[in-house]
Image (cartoon, rainbow, N blue to C red; front, top):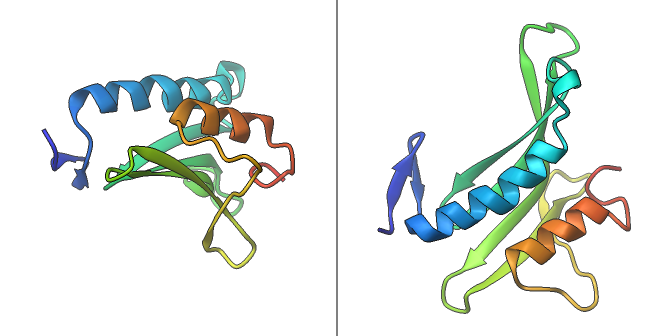
Length: 124
């Protein structure tokens, strides 16, 4: 069932793929969103076509009732190859391919790279 709509966005994944994404990326976000700090920090993820974006949300500095979102990582799926690619946001506010050697191509391994953040590309 390709071309689903979730939250007004076209989703290019079938139900099994969505379940896998929810389990892998959702678990990552849950682990990085401690319940005791729910009013100060939370990790969220969104789908946009073949991309899954993980962002950090915090209360805005000028109005704590509003939440601001800072992108952390983006995972893009290439349907033609069946492989995932990991991106990080540089200071120019553009997504760039994260290029460790070797680059794993499955979502769980790429999420593990973000979790490890060996080169401080995702969490500073």
